[in-house]
Image (cartoon, one colour):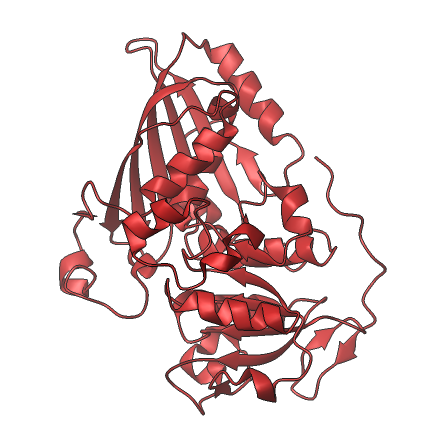
Length: 358
């Protein structure tokens, strides 16, 4: 699948802080840059040749430079309180707030003309009733119709014209990319998703489940039979299914003693028998030309995608049970969150999807 036509080469304008970007680059901010996802988004935008990162904001650590909080990212901007009235001409934004806290800020940015990628769950679900069942009252339901689900490989055309893009959750990114070829073919009768993630997915605020004494040398299931990413996966698979069949997904998440990384193991009962050759063809056709999805010839591991925007997918037909096993590996902070946000921003502003990510 072809990407957006590339504009001319950047002219190498340099800001007073040292960032190099193209002349006339969209002015961008990251709101919530003190968390893992926001800090990485700031890092990617700071080194991006097409965007001018002009501000990083946070509710904590105000007055510190982001590179003091995250030295490896080397973003020399000072963390500010978010005061939109004091920011001039913001055209692009990544909002890295928790659900319910994000939507009002997204609304304010949109009112000022900015195009926004939201990392929270506030705009991921198309159904207001489903959102309220899993998350509670929605703070800005009036904006739901304006939002596009940001799984780039599935909604590329709509993302390109969107004002609000709802960045997917990390678990749905891995699971839906792994299952999409089967869903499009109407082949999923039932699916169990067993997903494992490094402790960075829990964010900077640790509780008793993510403290090193619990997470080290341990595999820890959490949110058993109640994980909020379940309806997100169900909605996306139903949208892909040619008959739009609703599917009850059995999803279970686990924390594993990794810094970052994620593997979704999906066990699919198919609507009819699927031979190995057909399965290989489905996946090869689905992801031919995709810059960031690789169909692997053997089961992938998380190390293969660490620190990248790649998803590696492997599918096998189990002749014994008749099921299909799909394995999907991503970096939960990159393709699962921040680099996917930049991939979406690239599309929204007419740049190649790979810009600043390879």
